[in-house]
Amino acid sequence: MQQRTPIQEQIDLPFVESLRISFQSLKIRFGRSIITTAGITLGIAFLVSVWTNNEIGLALQESGRQSAINTFEETTEKGISTKDIWLIVMSLIVCVVGIANSMLMAVTERFREIGTMKCLGALDGFVVRLFLLESGFQGFSGALIGALIGTLGAVLLGLKDYGLDLFFYFPLLPAQPEDGTMQLGVIVVILLGCILGMILAVIGSSFPAWRAAKLPPAEAMRTEV
Amino acid sequence: MADIVVKTEDVVKEYRMGSNILRALDGINIEIERGEYISLMGPSGSGKSTLFNMIGALDRPTEGQVYIDGQNMSQLSQRQIAAFRCHRVGYIFQSYNLLHVRSAHGNVTLPMIFAGIPEKQRNEKAEQLLDLVGLGDRMYHLPDELSGGQRQRVAIARALANDPSIVLADEPTANLDTITGREIIDLIKRLNTDQSVTVISATHDLKMLDVSDRIVDIRDGLVERIRNRDEIDIEVGEVGGEGE
Ligand SMILES: Nc1ncnc2c1ncn2[C@@H]1O[C@H](COP(=O)(O)OP(=O)(O)O)[C@@H](O)[C@H]1O
Ligand SMILES: [Mg+2]
Picture 1 (spheres, chains in turn green, red):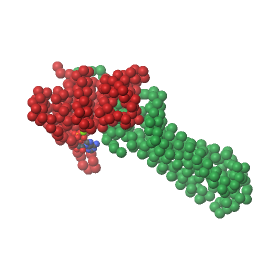
Picture 2 (cartoon, chains in turn brown, yellow; picture 1 turned 90 degrees about the horizontal axis):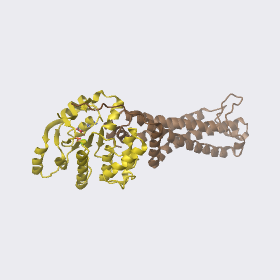
Picture 3 (cartoon, chains in turn yellow, purple; picture 1 turned 135 degrees about the horizontal axis):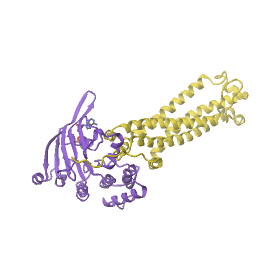
C-alpha cells in the first residue's frame, strides 16, 4: 500500500471570514432571524418594564410626592416590596427560559447545516464561533429593542399613575437616597438588560451548538427537524 | 502493483438504541484502487450509508480500521480529520445537503474558504466548476431556487472544490427522476474518467451498474460478493434495467 503525502492539520479561519459567513447567514435567514430575535426582545422588554416601573415608583416615592405615596401605600414600606421582588424574579425567569428556548430551537433546526459544514472541513471551534457571533449580534440588537420597548411601557404606566410629575423626578441616573436603598436609574437598567440579553443569547446558542459540533457529522446530519 | 486508496479491515459498526444493539456493519473488508468507480449495492438498510460514513470519516467504526492513502484514520487528530474531509474527499448526498443560506457559488466556495484559498482564486475556481457541471448561468441562485438535478450538480461542483482524490456519493440519484438521474451518473462518470477521481457510490439504482468498474454487494452489513465489470455486462442484459 502506497503512502501519499501525509494528511496535514486543518487551519484556523481568519476572524473576518467567520464574521462574513455569520452575517450572510443572518441576512439570508432574515425572517427566521427576526423570529429568534423577537423572542429575546420580548423577554428583555418584560424584564426592563417591570424593573423600570419599580425604579420610577421608588424615585417618586423618594420625592415625597403625595400622589406617589398614595399609589405606593398598600404595597410598600420602604424601598422594594416583596411583591416587586417577586415580579422582577418572575420576569427574569420568563426572560431566561424564553431566550434559551428560542436559541435552542434556532440551533436544533440547523444540525444538518452543522454536519454539512464539518463534511466540508469546518473545525468544531469554527462552528461554535459562528453561532457565538450570530447569537451575540441577535442578542444585543434584540435586547436593545426590548429594553427600549420595556422602558416606554414603564413610562406610559408611570404617566398613568403619577401624571406629568413623572418627568420632574424621572430616575434617569443612579441615585443613593438617604434611607440607604439603591436606585440604579433607567439608563443602567437598559444597559443591564442589553448585556443580559446578549449573554443569555450567546449561552443559549453556543451550548447546543457546541454539543452539535462535537457530534460526528453523520449523526448531526441525521437530525431531521 | 495496485495502488490502493481505500482499505477497510474488519470494520464493524454497532448502533446502540436503549438496550438494543444493532450491528449495521458486521466485519467489512474491501480494497479500492485509485481511479476505480465502485458501486456499493444493496437493499435499503443493508449498511451502505454506514459504510459510506466510515470511509468518509463522518463517523467512527466500533471495531476495525479504515486506511485511506495508507493512513490509519483512527490515528488522526481532530484537525487532521477536518483537513482530510476538506482536501481528500468530496461528498455527494442523496438529499444534496447544500447550505440553503448560500448561493450555488457560495456553496462551492465554502470548502475552499476552509482550505484557506484566497478569495479571488476560489471565486474563479467556483465559476469554473459550476461551468463544468452545466450551471454557468445559475451561479448566484440559492438552492431553493434550483431543481433537484441542479442542486445535485451544485453538490458535485462543491465536492470537487479542493481537488479530492476520492468522491463519495450516497445514493446521488435516489431523489431524481430517471433522466436527471442518468445525467448525474454520466457527470460523475465523466469526472471519474477525465479527472481520474476515485468514485465510491452507494446505490440501488441499476443505471449505476454499467458505469461501475466493480460492484460490491452489501447485505445485512456484510460483503456478499464483489463483481467485476465483465461479469456485470452479462447481468445487465439479464436484469434488463429492472428496479429494486
Ligand atoms: N444513527 C443510527 N442509529 C441507529 N441505527 C442506525 C443509524 N444509522 C443507521 N442505522 C441502522 O443501520 C442499518 C443500516 O443502515 P444504513 O447504513 O443507513 O443502510 P442503507 O444506507 O444501506 O439503506 C439500518 O438498519 C439502520 O436502521
Ligand atoms: Mg442509505
